[in-house]
Structures are given as structure tokens and as C-alpha cells.
Image (cartoon, rainbow, N blue to C red; front, side, top):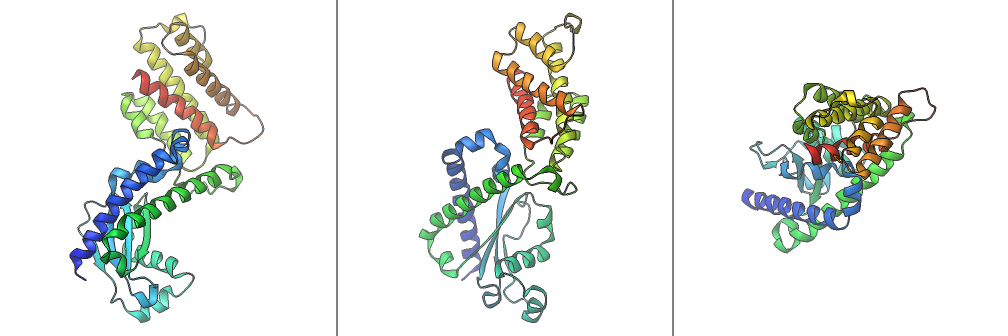
Length: 301
């Protein structure tokens, strides 16, 4: 089979995968996407995904055609790489352990160390016949998209239910893809950006107590910026606590009742974590505060 055949296979697989992932997440996982968008890290990077097709030794890895779908790889020149002639003695010495799939993932990561810097790294294998039969593309892509979505959501639920004491706080979680950048770019304020970046670093490392406290500060800053935007004097507001700021904006019909209720809930969380209350701060507490910030920024800035 020619190199162009493999490259065409890769291009078609990627296009079909993107179509199927988009379709499934907006149909089958619509509610989960709306309520927990960070459960699906692949969704955030869809527009940045590209594919490589790689040949490996079929006798050692059980499959000859492998694909890697990853983010920010569009500038990489090689869309097709042939490792099928790699030295078998070296493969046997380094990778003859566990499952062949895990061995292949490790081999590919060793050969392509840039994969360690990718936010998304989808690896799968296919037979030569799959490359040759064009009608197999869409069923293959649908199966892959469904598997990725199921794995993402299962991992997210497991991550959410994990007790805080069991987190490895020096490891960045893959489920930290709430749109911090999108929020920050809408607010041209250096103090707000600094606060959000601090909150993001804590959130990514599952340090939810400092993350919630810092997000509370971010929300307070947003409300003060909104008050200033509407030429309201802070002297007319007796207190600058979150609930007082929200009530002042509600009384002037700048925000609605629902937004004010969300601010009150965020205030309750922020007030709780700022004092010596027992119990752990959940990831969902941080999500509530951040989503409150996002809704205000989206509607008013």
C-alpha cells in the first residue's frame, strides 16, 4: 500500500471522528455538556486536532496501522511515519511487557516525545483491511468517538467523587479545561487576570480549597467592575461583600433574580471556605463559582 493511501485514510478518519464526536456530544451528551463542560476535554480542542498514521511491526504489536489524534500538531510535517522496520531485539528488550496496546503507546511516546506536551492524545489501532475499505471509515470513527466520550465522562465522574485527600496535587488534572482564557479575554483588567490565573493553577491541581477562595475574590472583582461599568457609586452600597454587591445590582435591574441567587450561593461557599469550617471543598463548589463568573461576563461584558 502507498503512503498516500495511509495519509488519505488518516484524513478521512479524522474528519469522520470530528463529525461523530460533535454529533454525539450535542445529542447523546447534551445535558452533561451543559451542566459539566469540563467533563469533555476533547471538546475544547476539537478545532485544533490533527492526526498521524503510523506503521508498527504487526508481529510484535498485533496491529500494523496505528493512529494518533492530538492537539496543536497541524504544524508537524510528518502525517505518516513508518516504524514497521524497527529492530525487533530492541522492541523485545524494552517493550515486551503488559498488553501490546500499552506497549505500543509507550513506544510511540518514546519515539514522539512531543506527545507528552499534548492535552489530547488519542491512540488506536486498525488492520490493513480497514485502510483499504472506504466504507469502514464512518463506523470506525463512530465507535472511536463513542469510546472517547464514554471514557471522558466516566473518568470525570470518578475524578469528581475522589476524596480530596487522595489527589496528587503536583499532577495537573486533565479535567481542568473550564474556559478561564475565554473569561479573562473579555475583561480587560490586570487584577482580574492575575486573580483568575491564580485560581486556575489551584483548580488544575485539584487544590479546591484555595481555588474556591480565590474564585470568590474573582467574582467580587467582576461585580465591582460591573458596578463601575454602570456608573454606580460604591458609596451607595453599605457593604462590599458578594451578597451585598449582587443585591445592589439586582435592585437596579442590572442582573436578574436567578443570577443574584447564584451569587448568593457562591457567597455562601466563599464565606464557608474563608473560615475554619470542617469538611472538604468539592470540585463542584469551584465549578459553581466559576460558572457564575462566566454567566455574568458573557451577559454584561
